[in-house]
Length: 245
Length: 163
Image (cartoon, rainbow over all chains, first blue to last red; front, side, top):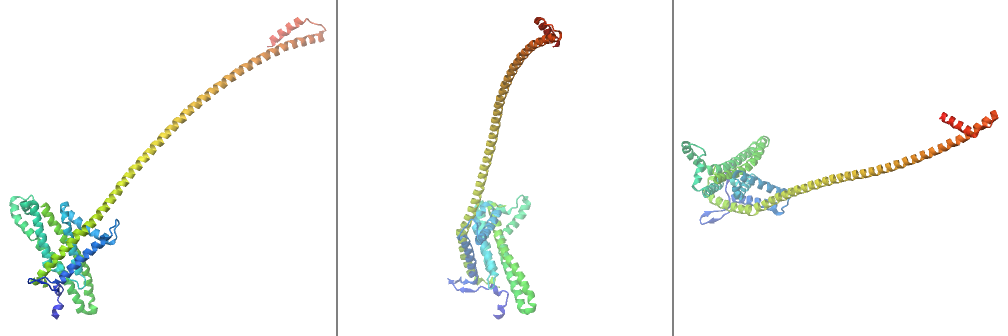
């Protein structure tokens, strides 16, 4: 157990805080669930505080909330058009959830629930299923024309259609892996570099310390970018379902 | 890797579902309507202000145009007034000049007539004085007493010659 304590993978361990078992299924409230709760509470507090005293000229908190709102709203409108705006609350929720999940994970003693493939995969598969349902609901069987490149001759279309279908089906995999791998790699890198500080001592430990400092800044950037990418891909997939090509 | 431990999947999925639904409710029922309302209200206020500014500008332009028009009218009226007054005054002045000129001409005529009369009277009196003087001169020089009629005739002839 002592050796495992220094493993870079130790930080991803799911630890039940409140054990709950229902019908033989373990749904314990774990550190992962705790940080999901933090993300929800942080988002709720941000928006509650920002919209408590709504003013024409916004204060700092209100301006922050408005900036986030307009950023995501702009992204949805730009990528899916006006018809996509009814999915804006979902994309906004997704963005805030992943953003706070990633950022809280970077704090000392933090846990990153987005570094677990099951969480990212669940979100990606949910989006994939929803997009497919929206596509068939809006266009019926015509939705299959998404897999035929527009303007391609029949011969090429026959070759390309399976590729298009494959790229469509692989979407949830690439989407979930991207977020999961980014978070995993960043946290492992930080942990390994931080381990070097201890093993190299006070004098030479300065080098990995500076490296950890730099990588932490990089990881904050990655945390924001990955939340943005996840939301942006959701918009692009929604656009496919709404407008086909 | 703890990520591939399936015994934790159920709890992660369960809490992901619970938390995501909770957050979706907060975002869609509280955050989005409230922020959307504020943004919409702000856009409306700005639009209203812009509209009012445009309206006020139009009103100002109209007022300026009306002012310019009134100014031009007043100026034209003043010019017209001045022109009429000038013409009237000129007529009065002309009339008075003519009256005065006529009166002066008349007075000059009268004066000239008076001068003529006085001159005639003077000439007549000169004739008598000259005849008397001539008779006195003749009497003193020659001791003769000429006939008054002859002297008068001679003086009249002499005066006529001198003239």
